[in-house]
Image (cartoon, rainbow, N blue to C red):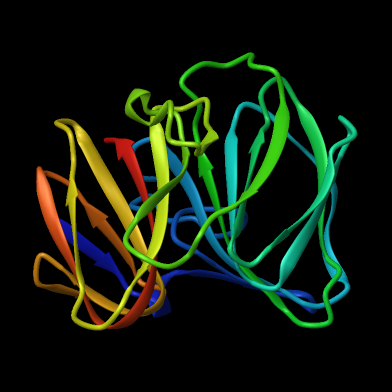
Length: 232
């Protein structure tokens, strides 16, 4: 089954520095039909104004993946980690037993990103942070993962049986995705448009895919894709 969640129907939050859309219930946006997708709990589509950002705040027991689409985010936390993650890069924060962090857009242009939260397989892990650059060209590649099959892939580690993948397809190109039993995929076209087993998915729409052992993603125009593979 392929369920499309159109971008215009997503939850919304807007203030003087943040313009956000929520694929799942988050903050003041509550929809009992959209509480998550398996262990995928949050997918926020954020635009952060220049010289603004998220002041220090705490997290616990969550794996938080930030995919930078445009611009850059500067991270700082109470463990002493600090770094800049730019477009084409990915950062992973293990909230674990507790972490306090801040995320700022120090760039002269808006930063656009996806922030993805995945519930860990077990609580009580040590908190941490890491960032890495990945090529954006070509089919879907694994960026962050806790799946056993990705142990030697070079992906950033996750304390969750899940994987975050991304890549690009030119118009007319196809990617075939295989899912193990009991797993689903949530896919978003950051740019462009695709079909998933023939179902149209537009720019920044979400596609929840379940009950499929294999599905075909075909680009109807040049597209940049981000996908989470997770138990459902």
